Length: 238
Image (cartoon, rainbow, N blue to C red; front, side, top):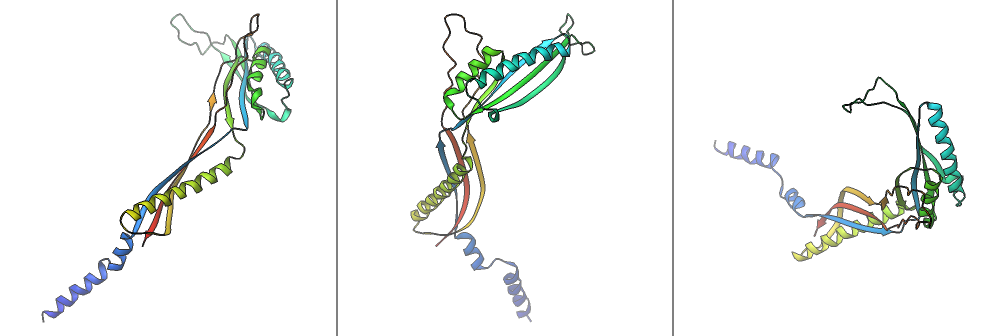
């Protein structure tokens, strides 16, 4: 009668435990991370130039702002900036509130109004960036948020970075496999793909109107942009 529980135990083990083939399959893989960074020269730049004015009334603050912004537009257009390279990025009218002797803002009172009008300028001639900032400042612009250099073929650069990251992962897998006398087989999965891009960004304040003799123009120097791709790949071992 003792053969019955022995047979049952053997059947239970065969049904519930992992097979030798499964264990062998899970063990014969290698997981590696791949990374690649590519660089490219920027081919266009964007900058934000703004005019901030205030006045006792909305109409007065707006009138002053319109005069100065029209001057800014005329100045940058005189440098060859086209209409399709200009875009209003911010426009706002905000009430201004006084403060008491303790520095607390009196929100129930209005002392005037502030108008902000910001313009984004995008140009492909990178040598004009400094001159555009100077011309805008001399024409009345009194804010400059940033200058960003970019590339038009970003998607193409990203694809190249992903391919280079996969080749880096395969190289690592080959190196590790060779170290233990194995070789790399087929790709099983790829995951955790990530992309990081770095852009040169500068935020120089617009210079004041230069006194005689004229001060040197604003210097804006573009740098290369970088795109980094990361992948995690699982390969079979053989």
